[in-house]
Image (cartoon, rainbow, N blue to C red):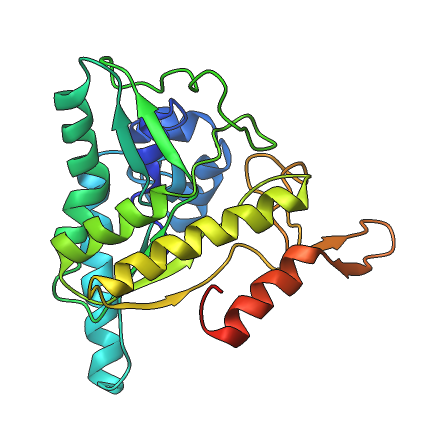
Length: 259
């Protein structure tokens, strides 16, 4: 299961809410309910529903899926991948942010303890104010193409948190940078993979690092605007052109580490 905690993160960012608010954005759920012969109030979009009921449903689905897989192939490692941001507090927001971190990251990591691994997916930190909402980006910070702070060091915090709480091997299953300046992406990879190296040096069981993503893609909220790819895509001819960051990351992989 990919990013079951994303709706909780989006709720903090003001994008998601309860099932009723989520359904309001998707009238097609009324048609789905009619086709299934069920009450429309029982259907809600996975990516935008943040509630305790949704958490319970996703946890039950995860456990049932894990049991079904291991019943047939007990040798296959099973886990889920989480959208775990590094939450930082502004002055006076420490308690609020601790609660948010526990709800969005912590409770999912606790439920990972019976799995074979946990995947973490993070891109930057989230700075929150006393109201639990995003605070302004610090003055002078480098920004990515969507106006967010470039903060690769979030990855180290997220890995350590996952290892401390879940106590299982960790995979970095998504990490990258939305930018039109590929030199920024190269610098980002160096810092992020340096975070992984420090975790490994401290004995944390990090099994792999997966960059997001191979090709400039369609982002589900922002369309073709953000450029995360190691290769550019011409939307007319569909030609794919590797960027210098692709060769840079390949060099790190061949050397099995940073220089």
